[in-house]
Image (spheres, rainbow over the protein chains, first blue to last red):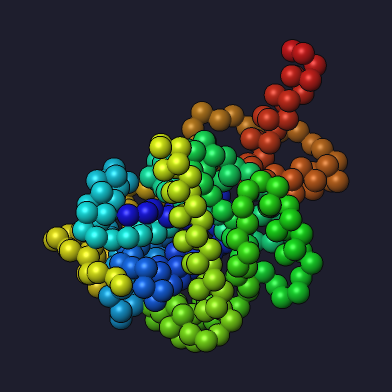
Length: 216
Length: 80
């Protein structure tokens, strides 16, 4: 099982939205079973899942201290991907979660404040020796700032070519436990999530291959 | 083709019972370490005050943390 951790020191960048949407995208792409884990005390992901009619992706309750054992058990139960949401902070508790990651996704809004603050989240992934990628979220259409943000981020790590734009349907779809992939499967937001999942999956496969090559 | 996951009791949540990890420190807990701190009061110009607070906010720093880091950097620069 591969573990994807969504981390960012900044709040409101879309960690929970991406966790839920990519979990659903994985299931729709036939890459499941996927399981979600909510480590944010705010509990938004768990609340969304409770309101959700569909049983997939699953959500696994855990404590931080039980996380390693829980991930092992989920892997043994046949889950292929675990997607872990974290609170917006840089703490030892979040470092412990990142240490369990196979891949770290760092959502970043294309704003100067977000770009300045991203360094500490990058350090978090680097100090744990985990591959990571930036995902630009809440981008405005045709905004020069988005292009500039992607260029600036690319100096520090891989940037997802799939950009997530600022649309109300992301929030609206989640009010009743769904995602954009289910409320408007042919819409632009759904296309972005599908493309983002393909990117994440591809990067994880590359990371795994690189690790295997190192071992061989 | 995806295969169904084999589930044991308690491994995954059932609807209505999902909850986040209860032992994750609450949001903002790290920043609220005020025990043992002393007040330090002085006046600065309006422009400096605005720039200092804006810089701290943009970098997610508490004002006292920015002051402490600035002081450390200054002492280092002076070779103290």
